[in-house]
Structure formats: C-alpha cells, structure tokens
Image 1: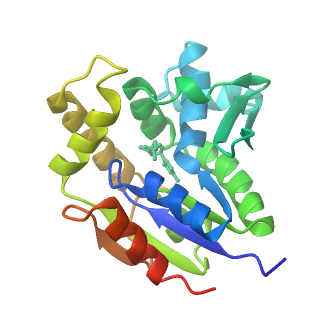
Image 2 (image 1 turned 180 degrees about the vertical axis):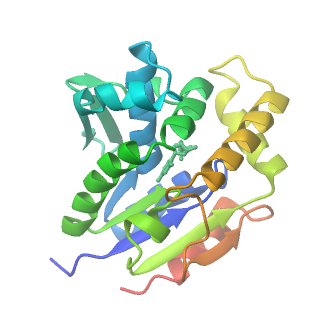
Length: 221
Ligand code: DC
C-alpha cells in the first residue's frame, strides 16, 4: 500500500465538484468523501426533530445525540447513517440543502464533522469535496482544486437533477443557490473561499470529460 494522499475539491453548489470527485476517486482507485452529505445529515436530524437549524442554542443542546456515520454500500456508493437508519435518500431535497447551509454556520457543528473528516483523510487516500476542505480541513493536502461556474449554468444543472423528483422551478433553484452561496461564503468560521494553492477551474463552458481530464492531468502520484 502506497503513501496516503488526499485530493480536495471545493466550490459552490452546482459547480460539478461531486460528480467530478466521484470520477476522480474511481480513476485513481481511492475513496471518495462527500462532506456536504454530512452537513445534510445534521440538518436532517434537526429538521426531523423539530429543531430550528438557525437556533444555535437549540442545535447545541442536541448535537451530542447526533450519531452520524459515513459508510459505503456494497457497490461503493457513500451512505450516511443516523444511528442505524440509512438517511442517504432523504438528504437531497431543497429543504435539506438550505438546512445544511444554515446549520453549517455553527462552529460546533463544523468541528464535530471536521474531526470525522480529518480522521478519515489521515488513514485513507481519498478525494474529498466540500466548501472548506482545502482551506481549513486539510490545508496541506497534496492536490487541491476549486471548481466554479456561472450561477445560471449551476442552477440549470441542479434543476435538471431535481425536476423529476421535486416540485421545483428553475427560478427557485437559482434563488436558493444564490442564497446558499452568500451564506456559505460570508459565514465567520471556515467560509467557502478559494484555498491557497488550489487549481481553479471554471466549468461554465466545459464538458464533464474536459473537467475530469484537467483535474487528472494535475495529479501525479
Ligand atoms: O455540497 P452540498 O451542496 O451537499 O453542501 C450542502 C451545504 O453544506 C452547503 O451549502 C454548505 C455546507 N457545507 C459546508 O459548510 N462545508 C462543507 N465542507 C460541505 C458542505
């Protein structure tokens, strides 16, 4: 087994980081960690227990009870467990997206999840995607990327993912993305920024394979 190394992929929603991160992990034959799903898991706990994700005091009162685990299905897909319950299929709704963005402003929530993320990355070579991975969670990661795209293009991508499952309009998806961008990049603790040393890719006019090839061309192991 070779030396452990990490690839970080940060960026706003709809920038393509999750699908690219999965493909990079597959090509390098290493693990993939979607940290957004972890914040979504915390939001799911709060929202299903009637707790306002913006109420820091109420969130802190129950945070120790949030028993979140990241595992894999037999086919290698990431699975999020709350206690014994697999919540993976419930956390992709617009409500959970916004809930995750709001609850992620609370430093204690971030520290709880960052601790799990760092432990995984220390022992396992992986591609990790999120908002603060290259800047805060793993600033010394070997390969760092920041993906971005025009907000109209990002909204369209997200809308196409959601439209058959949720009652959404392109306008509302765009509005929510703008609100999340603002909230994620303006929070005090570990906001969304371009990490120092990250290779920036604007995916507005690039196809999936072009982005994937570009990322892979910068990784030498
Ligand atoms: O990547 P995503 O859309 O699943 O993330 C959902 C929210 O979780 C995002 O709007 C902000 C938060 N998040 C974060 O604060 N830090 C991360 N590393 C990943 C996600």
